Each structure stands twice: as C-alpha cells, then as structure tokens.
Image (cartoon, rainbow, N blue to C red; front, top):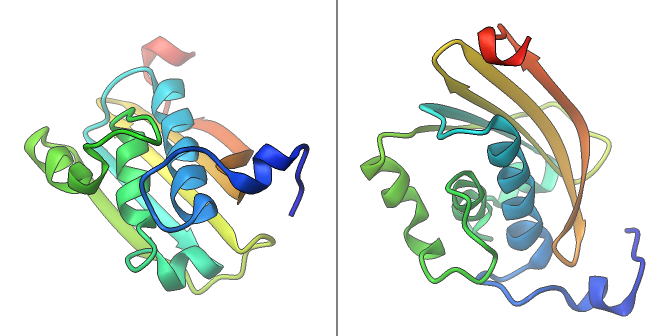
Length: 145
C-alpha cells in the first residue's frame, strides 16, 4: 500500500466497513461517471482478486453503484444505491473474474449510453484513495472523437 500522509491511513468519513473496499471503490466509480459525462444506461462491473471474493460482504457492490450515481463517500443514500439505480433504469452487471490482477482491489467499469462506451480500470489503494490504470473510449460516438 502507498500512503502520502496519516490521513490516507485513517481514511475519509464514509459509509461502509473498509475504506479500500467502499470509499476507494466509490471514488473509482465516481471518477468513471464524471469522465463519462452523463448517466449511463448500463454499467458492467468486473471485479478482481479481493474485490471479487468479498464485494457483497464488504459493501463494494453498493459503493461502486454509489459512485456511478455520483454520490459522495458520506452520502446517506449509499445503502440504497442499487435500488436507486434500478429506479433510474441503470442496468448494473457484476462480473466476478477468475483472472488475477496485479493489485488485490482492482475493478473494471464499462459505462454505456447510446453509442458511447467508456472503460475504466482502477485500483483502490486504501484510505479512500485510488489509482486509475486505464481509461479508454470504445465504439466512440460523435461527442468523443
């Protein structure tokens, strides 16, 4: 783990049992959502290593959907994020990968709306911090040429 200050170890004010499995995951998804620039119709979430093994029990699934909804880490709506996404007609697909990733808390998000597809791969490095490994547009629509 990489830390730049004691506040990275303590982590942010948040909802959830673990800053790396919730706050960091939320921030990765929020980054992807903001980069996408609009509400996605479908989000495919591929989980690797530790995320794949514990995503339901540690709240990573709820945190990722909260980020897609552009919630902050302390938002009281986080526990209801999956049902909120359903009400907003956002299709969420969770994929548990058997493939090994270099970091235990790795997630790939593919956001889709119209002809736009954005793929983001990120890792949660603790304390609510994250690193983006890949960000690419796929089957690009007119707005992102």
